[in-house]
Image: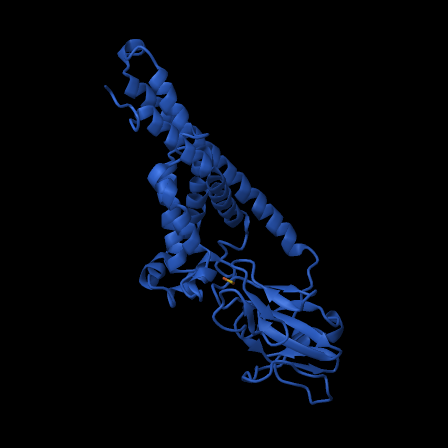
Length: 353
Ligand code: FES
């Protein structure tokens, strides 16, 4: 008498393996799209490689070097900041495309996990509690794909393997073996996907630069320092309340950044902080009352954006939220408030220092 119950052959194993691939498909699609998008977004951002911009990769690396456990490595990479930025973008794009196509899916997953680990040790290192930083979640989300790749589901890896299996006889034309045929197909797929990725990356970078150039000249509420009314030497910044009323006063020290009328009540305008050269935000809290802050997020150096509807600054990178009244952190990973900038009103003009 033969007992067959519980006997599970290779076919059963293959089925289970593919089932896992289908179950993980939504996560795979999310990771693939997110990493591809992140790479393209960096390439399309004209400020990303512009070392003089606070939104640049160089600026962010310099900021992170002092607060990361791999700071020495970050400092070393700073010598080739632009190249590092390009490599990060292309690596993200390659990981995303490889994951979506299921081409060298395990290798792509290893790359994704390494990128996530690097971001966790730098960008998210100071997130508190730790789960506010997304990178640790990405790191663990890659682990099933490191182990199983695309599991043969909707993947070029699976297609290539299937073609190799079904290729008969064992020797192809000209005496080519089955393995050699599979290797040739895989190389072709990698070269095609690589060329397509580079083409998309190049086009994105080109369009991004064009769009960036257009955007920089587009109408955006921006205060421009008025040189004719600029004081010769900025005074020291007070560490107290950054708001300032328009009560009569003598002409203040600092830089005249524009007329009061340029910032209506409840609105904000960007200006260049004369002390650091970084962007700042000037907010009109109520009639004649203003507050000014550095626009550089205290988490990883991204530029915060003003939301008039709830009078908050929101960081586009990791969702940090700051009060537009006090600069205090209202949510997200930033470890400290936005640095206040002293603002004063005189003769209908705004002065910062
Ligand atoms: Fe991370 Fe702003 S840079 S929240």
